[in-house]
Length: 157
View 1 (tube, rainbow, N blue to C red):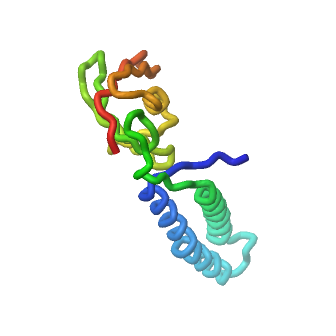
View 2 (cartoon, rainbow, N blue to C red):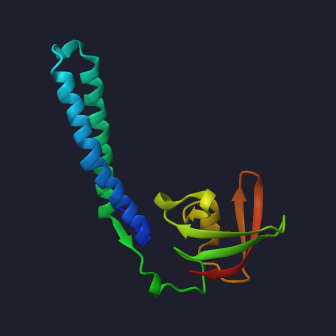
């Protein structure tokens, strides 16, 4: 059975926008490229035609994958989330026990992850280490640089 993909409302809407762009902007553009290349004559030696056909195949694969992902996605109702422990969409303030630095992470799906904006995947090493923890708990994370201990300071939405 296919794995369910949990998303925020914003993340789900972004997937739908991306799919719309692929289907209604990029697909017609590639179709036009194929038609233009076809009009140039002999297809067996027409590099433009073959490149456009390859682009079309890649685009159709991407559309199919995105449609599958959307069909398996569920929007999380933020009003029903529990802030007593770290879970999907939690905004977690942590303190690195080694460097004493404080950071804030938002727990999201792999598709929504963006480390620069503080959104980390629940399937990343840090995400896995934080999931289910409560305020005051220590999470031990295995990172390439070694083990990191993060103390949960605050959990909110």
